[in-house]
Amino acid sequence: MNQGPSNKRWLRKLLRREPHQLIYNSHGELYLKRWYVIPRNPLLNVYVHQFIHSDDDRAPHDHPWWFVSWVLKGHYFEHTDTGVIRRERWSWAFRRAVHRHIVKLDTVTVQDRYEDGSWARSASVQDVPAWTLLITGRRVRQWGFWCPTRYMVGLEPYNPAARFVPWQDFGAGGCGE
Image (tube, rainbow, N blue to C red; front, side, top):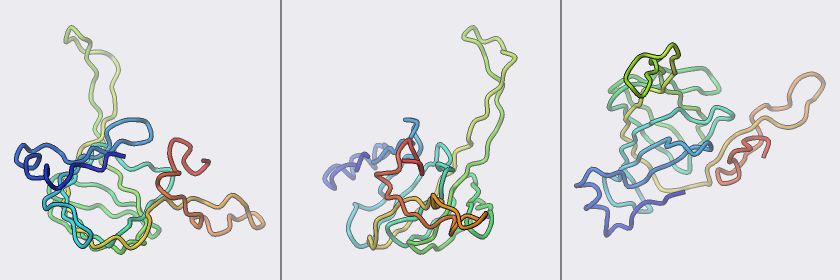
């Protein structure tokens, strides 16, 4: 994963409006652009995120720090253990590091075009980007995904989101590793 620039290059990238970090999903597609509003440090960080694609929906994830998020542009749907919350523009939320969620962007259907500019009969579904401001605390834990356990008790799964998979082990295999 791209860790972004050293603090020496931080201001130059910020002034050029270049993202400090590009994060890709398990399919190799650009998932998130991240700008550091202040130089990265161990106590408190402030990021601007542009979500290009929705989170991987195979399992909810948590974070390594507490955080506050504020939607600057667009909206998204936050899927949690207790339901789905639509996060609208200007809404904000505080979350502890152990908060588990999946961020899903809204989608739009776009009619495809051929190279000559004529319309095709097919259409594609595209995610609608969303922008957020994120303020984080200090790192307190490793982050990762919460996968269903691999065994059953009777006919019911035993604690369906109890198996922690560190982010670096999740990859293309997801919960199946």
